[in-house]
Length: 155
Image (cartoon, rainbow, N blue to C red):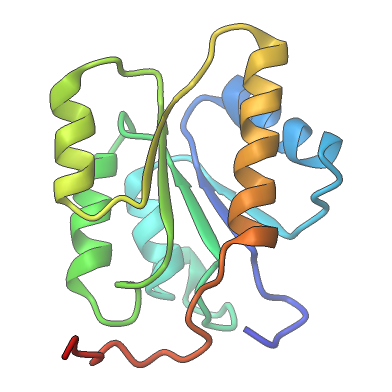
């Protein structure tokens, strides 16, 4: 993603308070990366696949998707399935960030290809600290493929 307009984080969150807290926590951690916030699962897919309201954006994948599970129009799990089924988005790191404590949500998230599952802390300081650590890890420490090729086979 060499474009200066490239998005580093696609934040998929229908709760405006949680979205604002997430963006504030990233700024507090000095992660001034470009963030695109979308409020429903259909918008996530439109953004990723450059269609609908995002048809004219310069295509390119975000470095990270922070994905809530409970979203209107298309659920987070459905978004995850569609991302992993398409070669253009198969390798994009996805962190499920949700308030769900349900074991089946954790299991399904990983079965559908999540890279991480994080339960949103309720307390502001803990929430801020968790999001900051996520951002630091996924944007500064983690390595992602620089190529769009996904036909790598293990030998």
